[in-house]
Amino acid sequence: MSKPGAAAAPAAKKPAKPSTPQSIPLAEDLERSLDTLSTDELQSICHRLRDEYKRRTVALASAMHELRTPLAVMDGYLQVLATGKAGALNDKQRQIIDDMQANGKRLKNFISEFLTFSSIETKNPDLHLEFGDLNACLAEVCEMWMPRFREKGVALYFLPEDQLQAVQFDALKIQHVVSNLVHNAWKFTPPRGTVWLSTEEFGWDRRLHQEQTQHERRRERTRLPRAIRVVVSDTGPGIEPEFHQEIFQDFRKVSSPANSPDSMGLGLSIARRLVQAHGGKIWVESNPGSGSKFCFVIPRHLPAKPAATDPKPDKS
Picture 1 (cartoon, rainbow, N blue to C red):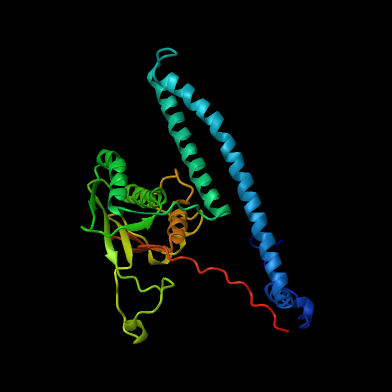
Picture 2 (cartoon, helix red, strand yellow):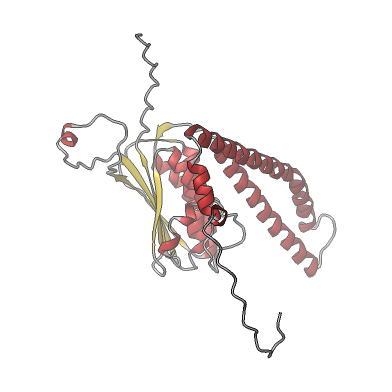
């Protein structure tokens, strides 16, 4: 290495390497290796990788589950100290206990969020589907969140569509989805802002494994109210279009001053999985400075899966 201020010596030219198989870039080498594998071998590799991923996720979830008991004990002792039952506290001691309780709450949120994620990731969500009143279900979510919105000074409005038809859904799972979306809106909307939660009939063009109608056979597009759309809108800072897909991935968070460290970046990922389990889809419409609108649609009823047919006997 030359000293500062010294003239650099001319670099000796290395002879160019011949174009041999050893000089092929790693990416091309891997691509060629994959090309030599049969479909069965590729499927076997994918299954092994998936099994290993599930095994590690379950192991981590088990470790987090074990943290719940000592965390509950610590929280109990902090409650005793905070109420002064173990003796009077000065201002500095009370501040320390408040900080410990806040961080304990953060840790509990991390654990709860990851356990929910691992449960969905390692197995398909177990849906308890029933036809019910979606508006009444979402009204409970609004009622639960209303105190936190009032405390922050953000208005929350529920705008349900009148005469909404009955929907086949898992009430607890859909409440989880909407609660995650409302939580995001609450977190990013500044005081004096507004959040709206609305429902509406939606003419989804997606095929639901139904027989074609006469109009469809004539290639006429008939938008029937086959689905329900739920929308959570806010007057927050908005999201750059380049992040519209990324935020629904696992452990992804958009950098923002309003983004608190109390989340692992799994809320929208969990919402996506639960909506997809209902046969629906979820997306965001947003631009910087214009707020965000998170939407998801679910069919009014899930189509029955086609029954497996027995293979025809060999006539030979």
